Image (cartoon, rainbow over all chains, first blue to last red; front, side, top):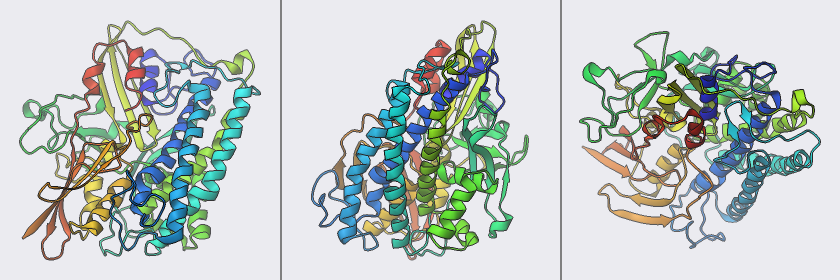
Length: 484
Length: 62
């Protein structure tokens, strides 16, 4: 959605919310139905992606598959099974959920495809709206509602209870293990851009920056998002910093991407995005993005339904005092819990978008045309991909792209050190963890990294310190899921 | 003394991410971590000089 929103901006659609075209009936506004349809496409993708992540990428970190139906079968075996994993009949039940979740994901794709033609990589998203109209009361709208009912039932009755089971099975808290350092916490600073714009000018998920480094939850702070604070560092990345480092610490709107593989001191192709502590400040925050960031930002900002959802989950579902639960949210299982709660919240909101699809010329229009400007123009699009804050910045000169920069969620989470030497958030999350190069150590590392939902696997190897392959898994290439 | 643990690539995610961890040989506590993106993405270069409408489709899934 960021790619289309940045071109919206370059074509002159105006923004009321940062980086987003305004929704309404004006010449420079995205039509209300076009916006609702975009939300449905993005919502279906988010719901699908969160279920994918928990079951098909992360769950095997928590299930001992010995004596389950997949025991000894590729691609689930061989795998590390550790003493703290869920075993026995419950493990078998979870393996069966793993299979059911495949069906649910297909249904989520099918729901979105009524609008998008296909999910993901849809041809239906165009600057100014969506190519498809779906009138209220149509068969397509009714089908989407029916599909959604099934998905919501799975989320309520299967997905969320299973996350709770996993959380309680692992030390009774939301943390992994008992390391005093607080394994997997990360940087405890959270950035969200927000998405799902409404016609009233708000967003269902609000953006902001939350600083949760204080020990006391009462001292945690949240501030509105300022996109001008974003910058990218390249000292430890394989990119040319330019003479006198003029390409370092640039805002993405004027960003430079000049590959320089093998650069001395560099160790990653990812740049290091950072968020200034104040306008023009040389100090920057390392930020985590993703569902946990969105739930914390929205809860601290008191945005509903998220504040109530998170509060009720902690106090009712987990039965914990609110401050205890909040203090433990920055954690491995806290990320899974935030992802599950967000999945439910968006799935529960989607019926309202379907119900709001219009039928008249005024409300049923899904697309508005604007020409590509022949004069220089710029645009940027911010959104929340399932994995976190996503931004694209574009500059157009002579009707062609003269600069394009994308700062994606995993670049934030898996970034190398920045030019001030600060480690990225996944690096910080692993730091301080007690690790050995065995099944327990590898499981810990896997749990921490996967809780951030980096991306999708095609081939799976686990390699020891001397780079000898310990075990090799071949996972069926997952063609319909892509990196975001 | 320090030990080094390398996981390359990290599994069950999009490939080409590796992590190199230095641990204290006595306590096994991680004291240094490098998160290594092993793949050049290059979308910024692919987009140059294109029709802006094309970028919506080309860059949609990053």
